Length: 508
Image (cartoon, rainbow, N blue to C red; front, top):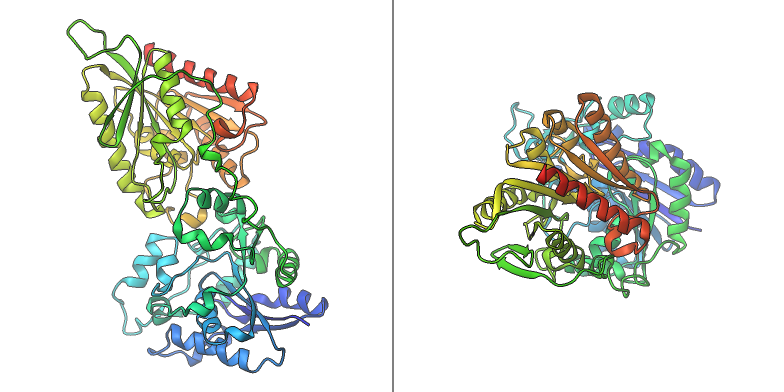
């Protein structure tokens, strides 16, 4: 008989597992929902000294009183911190650790480092405004989305979440996690709530980039599941969650180890067979030059330029860097073959918190390109791909006169809920209202992940409302990153159509 120990996230308690626990018991499992000290109906036990160590000991004590020889520990959001701390002290009792829409904290990480929203982090770190500042107040009814996607929650669910939420002792979020090696050696399962912005497909792409921090995920004892709901699946999809937990306990789930041995999709060949072009490398910027362009001598006509902006986050140590990926090399050569100067760059979007730095890198690269005598400084287009789509926001909100077109391929056009950028300026779906008559060429793939597709539709709705000039190039059978995944005539024609449309705006 499987025994589950369920540990909820911030501000909640054992009550949040009620429906899931009932379904697990119906399936014959033992279930122990945990209410941590200071949370739920134990909020009166909290004090200034209540910290992460207190919550780790709560879980350890419960494990010690479970008669089953092994237990499955489930940690939701913040709950993964006390779960991992307890697993390190009782590894012989743990059959599996389940990360339920949770981050991957490392030794020494406080929980606040994994809080997605910067406003919430600032509140946790800031000085208290009242004498009772050792407690962090729970979110108001309209603030839960700052902690994660509320997709799937009814008004009743949100009201219940708000009514039963408890203040969180600050020390539980700021005390560093002590993670013994024994805890990291246990079998694990990751459950992604896709409406919150993560999924198996996203993790597979990140692992393919070579991030050493994620190397452990290819262990065959590590499995994954997707749940098509928001950040609180125990309320929005209790039946589906219970089913996934039972499968996880049985060792089922998707494994990355069988797929990462293949060549990562971003390193596969470009879908068009383009001849080599002269390339010049200046710092983080590469220029692909048409054959007839030489050294910018007097009388030589300057050419329009198209700057390609990669997505990410891309680990700082990833090699090759994005400008040497086949898709960007292919795009640069292709635009040079059409008579423009193709530009690629490496910007420093190494983490989701790096968008401001990446925006600065892009602005610096554009100034470098515009200063080149071979470039017509008044005819520039920007072409953003994937998560680089968020970097369109600055240019859409206040287009400079030299910017003749913005293009975007399979873009992310609004921050995903788990990215913590809800209050930032990187919101193209809002910025497009300032675009005026700036042309936008958007390549949309029909096989996009739902969490990204919804941001595209949000953008297109806003664009239609304000009369923005948006041309959509559809690839019904295309996938995210189609240039190296879909070598089809449909995809080739789409690249050619989008490129020629961008050039028409540059030359118009």
